Length: 115
Length: 276
Image (cartoon, rainbow over all chains, first blue to last red):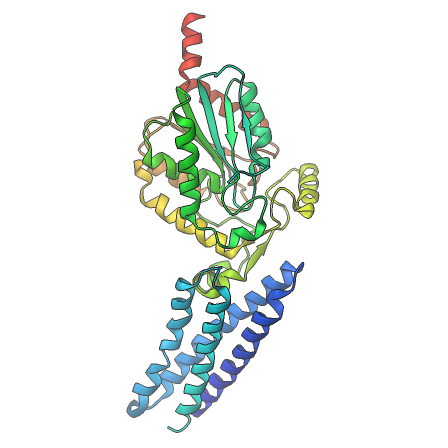
């Protein structure tokens, strides 16, 4: 159980750093569409790993505290909710919201360490 | 809003028949010009306009929606229809889907030509990870960051023509050199809407598609052919071309079959046959 949580925290942290790096550095580079495409693909893979790490945490928790871990499942849905709402004109805002939710899931993961 | 890439090929005396052409995704009217000139030389007025998000300001493509494409095409259709007895629609790739969508809502279109109709992105150059990643790529914020770089064979089987097209791509003057995922998202949304109502298309249709299309397999053309309500319909499958059928090895066949199709429906042509 604890191993899955540490794994989730590690993946989440890598995701936060990678997403922030993309938002503020990589995606602003002009003239290298292959680099940007590759980095976006990398973030897509991270999304998938992130989702699976959440599922690993939820399924490894004991029944008593599973209701807490289940809240973590919401963080699987948030990226799709943000994706539906996002527009190109407000991309900066929505990418910030996405980053915020990644940070919130990390904080929640730290909180789950108590149990 | 007009673009320098728009064209209007009009005869001095209104021939009574016209074709409104729609270009492909990330393309421009320039890619339809040669085809348009052939139709023009065969007695048709031909119109081609830059779709919203394309052409002069490449960044606009990230904020365009499929509804923008449809309302634009409606506007052009409304402006032109009443000027001609026979009015046809034609389109390449995304343009063919727009034409089909327009045909679903208007019963006074004489005929429609769909070239490399793109309802599905399942051609052989689509990356192997596309199917597994498409949910993430399209439905999260990543859709505004990810682009598919344009890559060999650029939709053209003929190597000489491909090299010319490749150098045009590098200049990025007439088409983009990548497909933004947000644009693909809008294309797939439009495709979904069009497929749902495909049975409302009941006008004469000619579909031309390559069996080796690198971007969209002939599943798209076959879907249209099998599901439209048209009494008169024809599907030509090419076996020596890729996606850009109006540039590739069988372009003469595409041009000639198009004119043949248009003439078979044109009242002007029929009047000449009767009087001749």
